[in-house]
Each structure stands twice: as structure tokens, then as C-alpha cells.
Length: 103
Image 1 (cartoon, rainbow, N blue to C red):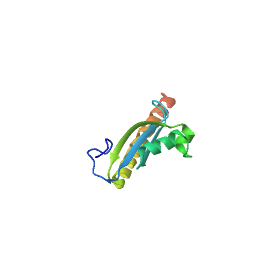
Image 2: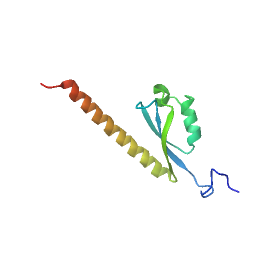
Image 3: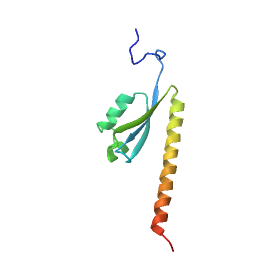
Image 4: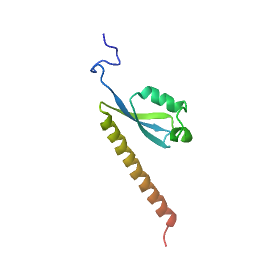
């Protein structure tokens, strides 16, 4: 008998997750990849991992996707990080243009 958790899945299929953590609504974001989403988010919440998420208090899981191939998951993580960088660049340019004002 299959458990509810594995129902509809092939047995022994490896799963990978691309996930997004936030410090608060509209706060700092972190994108990562893991094969154990529950354990990894617990590690972040417990500040067991030195680095970005501990330094900036990024602990709230706000989104995730499941993948069966680690390469695809890493590609998706990079895609999201690229989108995040472009949004930050646009926000910086907009803020700079407001600071410069009319000449």
C-alpha cells in the first residue's frame, strides 16, 4: 500500500525542488535548489546555515516547484535568479532617475 505522500508517483523517483524564501512580504528573496524541501526549509528557519538567509533573516517559504531532473532544476533556479537581477536593475535605474530629477 502506498502512502498518501507517494500516491500517483513512481517509486524511488528522485525529486528536486526549486524554492523561494522571503524575509517578509515585499522583503528580501532567496532562491535555492534541494532534494529535501522540508529539511532544507527547517535548516533555513533554524539559522543552521551560515550565509545569506541567516544574515538577512530570510526564512519564509513562499513558493516552490518540483522537478525530476537535477539539471532542469538548476537551470530553473538560474532562470529565476536572472529574472530577479533584471528586476533589481530596473528598480535601481528608476530610483536613480528620481534622484537626478529635472536639470
